[in-house]
Length: 248
Ligand SMILES: Nc1ncnc2c1ncn2[C@@H]1O[C@H](COP(=O)(O)OP(=O)(O)O)[C@@H](O)[C@H]1O
Ligand SMILES: [Mg+2]
Image (cartoon, helix red, strand yellow):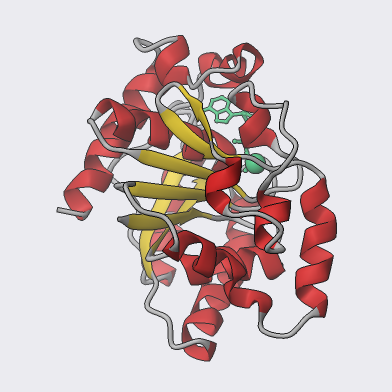
């Protein structure tokens, strides 16, 4: 069982899209995948048509139910959903001692999954620390734009700090370029900047900008299922193969 955090503290950087479609693509490669929605916006849950639930990650994190109690199946993926109740839960967790490992403990109670992907919130918060402490590895989806670079320092520093403070082994697999517009030269410059200034790999795979990726959520589907021949479905399949290769 490999646990990944899909992380970037900026909003709109393709975290949720990546969690869903990497998950769906790994599933196509016969892997058993659990998606954990750890964002109070509940975009991941909603994008897979999950909006009817009594209990969610908010309850599981507070110990009011088990994580198994809240799991739902979609497209042969398993989902641990969230909604805005998670914002209150985050406050409760932040107020009490030692709650950084609440998610790690829930994850430890699970079995039968090959991959667990955690869709992180757009902040470096208590929930993000929980996600990191539950994870073996990290993927940073990023638009290859100058403004995205601002946040990169912070993510890397946060991960380093969590690793050190909790003596936790976390591997940053790398930066995944998303919403890439090949016609723009800037992408290449940003890529070079990262390569020259950080000890971070940039995945060979990249996810092209493609309207199908943004349409799929309104049908409650992954793009892998909604339009399997679209650029974004093809790109996420290729990315999944790269991730599988890294974990061999
Ligand atoms: N490859 C892509 N091509 C086009 N639009 C995309 C792509 N990936 C994501 N989007 C869209 O960009 C927006 C932000 O993506 P999202 O995955 O929700 O980011 P985050 O979870 O980091 O906030 C969404 O509207 C999504 O549909
Ligand atoms: Mg999101």
